[in-house]
Image 1 (cartoon, rainbow, N blue to C red):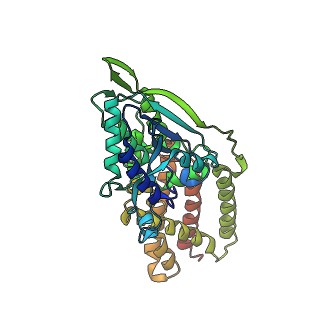
Image 2: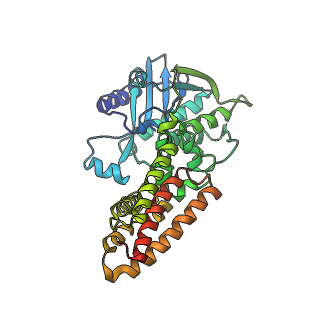
Image 3: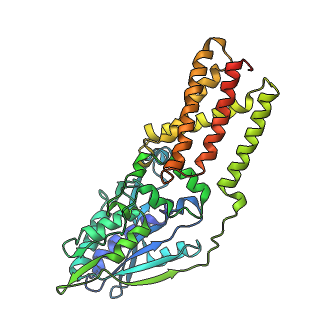
Length: 394
């Protein structure tokens, strides 16, 4: 989604629209309603594409784009609300020309699905958008999986005139996680990071409506939908128009891929830790540092689960292998009275890490294969500390 649409001109546009739409009366009979689909971009925030609604009325010379993916940077406590998932998003409006100007330099493929709608259907949609624009309605609590710029369009287009529209069905219902991975094949590092951060909710199989949380699948549903006009079923999408089309370099450098880099790091860590043990070196700083870094990561995952409203990050089993308990264990590692506790923890932790490694191969659809190297690095560090704990080489 386009999470960072700028709002510097929003107030002016909004006031302009609300005055024009009633002063000049957009005519449902003359209006053309279409859905704009913007493909993913290079920046991380644009990795999942964007969707918006366009209403064009040549008679009244109005051409507007309705965008549910905006927020106000001037919101009090903006950053704390953004991080904790408590930031209100809003429906904003711009002219189509402004929309084109904003996206023309971003290099993102953009197309328009022109809808086959009756006058009554268009009137329903226009009224629904006008209602959503009212001050008490335009703000909403954004949820990446369940309530975003794409799912809101599904509700406006396919639920309002539901009596005359047959909603298209996807060929296969998939989990939220699997559908998100469709967008991330060209961004392997981001794919790995998001896979680690997503909780169990992301593995829930979506129904047809939930699948529309991503613009690509909203587009597929719209293309499969039909509408009833004059007692005949016709395609809901009358025409697909290209707005922007660019040449893209889709090649990934294999030497900067997570798999290659993490394999190299794993080998280096193994050599360093093995040398540390065989030379009976009392220094266990590397192994302890690895446990500390993973423990800090675990605290971050736990915080995102417990203290935020990012539901997609809840119930994250990555907490088990990035255990926050690593931090107190490292603190107790060299204290004689805690050696038994440390030993039991490290033994249990090694078993958990080993189970995770086997699970990756048993259920590859639930894990990124690059988890393997990350967990092996942690396992090597934990085994080293357990060895030092047992044999007194601290």
